[in-house]
Length: 238
Image (tube, rainbow, N blue to C red):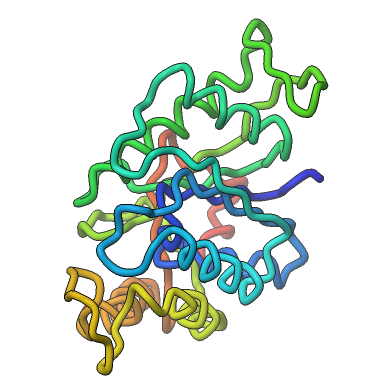
């Protein structure tokens, strides 16, 4: 299966929190989108890896993505080295995405910046012919995505471009709330965390509303780029 977009997160729920509105929009337009989680989020204070697996599957069904995989890297301790890069390269060559969405370059959780660099490096290396990979006993062909974009997470980062998700904000929120063990529940007996407060849950929507306000729409998601954004015509900008 060839994908148009592969969205990668260090943890299950990274993608939903940060770019699920964009994913839902592109799925509705007929694009094939996949999600790759690097870890199972097993170090999370609430829940466990098995619960996160179930929640990730539910979120995938809500968004209508074509596929979702987990590389089962070690939460909190994976590194950007050859071993981990090769595993990401195998996925890139398997699905041959045109666009890769990945973690914020710099963020509160150490896995986010590390995952961002790992995926970005793998996207470049995946296009090198002398790096050979085998998947399901078959030699893979090289593939380099056309674009790598980084979504915005905990920290406030000025985006290089924003996507209007006004028609998909409710789908975004539904996919986030599929991770019921992680986010606000007034009746929960689990320990409090920085992402379990009502303020954090509310912030998902009001941050999207603020980005939307700036471009004159109701809701938007922001991304940063690794190279100049190019348009064929200045009329391509809304």
